[in-house]
Image (tube, rainbow, N blue to C red; front, side, top):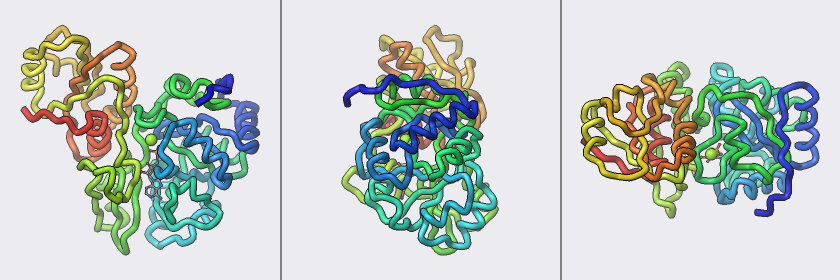
Length: 341
Ligand code: AMP
Ligand code: MG
């Protein structure tokens, strides 16, 4: 792609939000902070603007975008039907990191929905995202603001590193709180199916219905020729340049395995420095709780590249609660290479 923009770094003042909104109204793409990860935002009703998002990311056109709203009333122009369960979820979890898949209205261009007749809708809680939607006067279509395939950005600096020259502006709203993308769900009568796990967990969704299903693409590799409920899951995803291996074992087994390796430019992603057993290999700790791990994971994958790592050995996270989201991202970053000890 031709790098035609001198990418402006904006803050979150009223003037800066208005500057970003003006760009959105002109059909441009803006880097936007949210509570999950940074997004690449454009007018969700403007087909050409949405196409610019795909060009900036180098994203396959069948991988749909999520439409972001700031008020529940905006949903009537986006979703053609709103099941009772969706209304309950909206009341319970919005604003927040939950995306609902609903039948789309004709107003949503097929470039936004990746050619599907459904659309993903979410109401973010981040004040700068909400201010930008309000100032733009339209819902904003936004996928994560990384180059397609790379780890999602959790700081404005990450967005600048991927998008410099590709978009006119980025709003710096600080570090993202969640660090992993939204939980994506669809409805199957009285059941909710999780297509992509996130900070809103299966246990939390059980507060609205007892029947929570988990799509098989969450934990398993999806063949690129297979039809898939959440198209994003079938692509190579979240990968740093380094080759990542997921090491499934206890802290002691991990340290012993690492001590036996003889690879140059290796790096470890661990929960805690004690996982390293005193070994002198560069490592990044991402914390002992799943919430901390989610917050730091993408940043750690980017740091591995910055440090010139060729191989990354990562401890395998637990798969309960928010851990399911961490595992789902890490196993894709590792191209499903899991070493069971
Ligand atoms: P991103 O925020 O970059 O991870 O991209 C949005 C992701 O949301 C896509 O990759 C899909 O997995 C999911 N998504 C968005 N719209 C739909 C839809 N209509 N049906 C199923 N999944 C969707
Ligand atoms: Mg993404």
